Length: 530
Ligand code: XMP
Image (tube, rainbow, N blue to C red; front, top):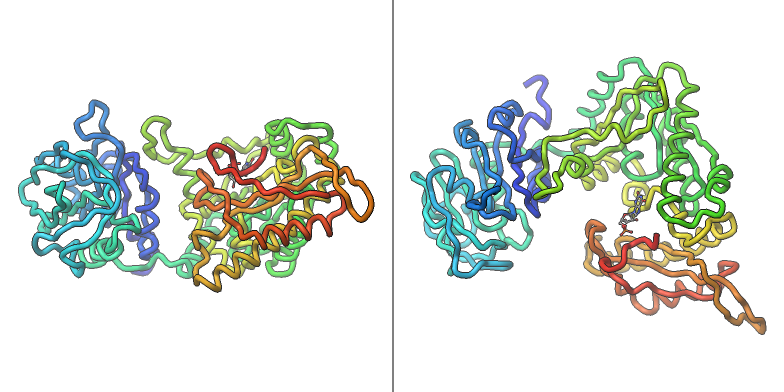
């Protein structure tokens, strides 16, 4: 096909409020096939319009017979597209096609052994006995006509079922969860053998496609972009730089609250490595003035956010011919902004464009080239585009920056102290993570710290240095293990790492005479102190 793209093959993941909804879409993409999440409220016609190559029905927390149980348009099974259902997805497939679902005596949660009961295209190449991940109380009690049972467990008569002729497959367990020993093999069987798809969704293929799309949309117009130093805006900038070069103006608003050396690194990358129009707005003094005496965390956030757009539009309004604003919106932002409060179903995609406070009379069309990419794909794109690791693998850092790590009022002296102490914390924990990587061969070792930084509280304590009494600030070291920041455990850093951080901070940073380690998890604490 002359104009075929990696998105021509598409798996639709129908979301029933699944705990693992995004995970299914990510697993499919990890195998090289593009996938999108749609709400279970979407009609079969709407799904057909998306031209799916396959449909996966996710799990979900409801019981199929509950009054407000989410269902799926029965015509989905008449589209002539292979369908695979997991957990609630299996149950909804069963009841929609004439089977039955009932309560089991005992639910099954966690690792469970299944026994295969015959040939199965979905389970092909996997052992007769294997461990899967279950999380259910209800289960299919009678399969619809045309289906055969392909595995069972001690408590669940239909652990999986299939109608190979119509290409309908389902499992009560979760193949997308890593604890399902052969889950990956089952997904591969479905995507490649059953649906005949090809693994074309690879980041190096996609760069050129995205570059072509940006060029076509922008033509000879200009694009403006607000660079924060974070991964998402940097990858959009690198992508637009590849597509349109100097037609892109990157505005970097320096609020003076980034970490040590970060502004210089951003400037270096986007002036030396990429050939774009780079504007460095030195707003440090203005931010300090606005934040003077402000102690309330939410007020700090408001001031910093509002001022960002003021600074940004002041530059934008002086540029001629700018028609587009590029943004680093990513797929989870879109899914989460569209998610319903009740049941958490990812509803039809809603744009959140109105979050940008355009001044009176100002308008730009938006370019959001990453709006269908997951975070790990954004990082992979960044690497393909040649961005340095310190940007691509940057740990999460809040937009309001160090202002919410200085407890109480922010001033220049405290900002400087915190920058120095924070640089030491990061240097020592980076080195520790690197040692773990050498020992374990993985960057996601369960003991590696995920986010780590210094906090400057608004208290002083007495110390003694040399023969002199000191009365100075402490530094709190915060380091957490987490996957997604929703929950976090404090990192069990070795004493010698903590000891070295303490000795270095007190020895090297003027004004600090004590170091403490925060040993609270989230919940009940949060990761940040403000
Ligand atoms: P908490 O403190 O709520 O943080 O446990 C969860 C994650 O969000 C980051 N964070 C922010 N990011 N603007 C941001 O862009 C903010 O105002 C903000 N507050 C917290 C935090 O660093 C952690 O990764």
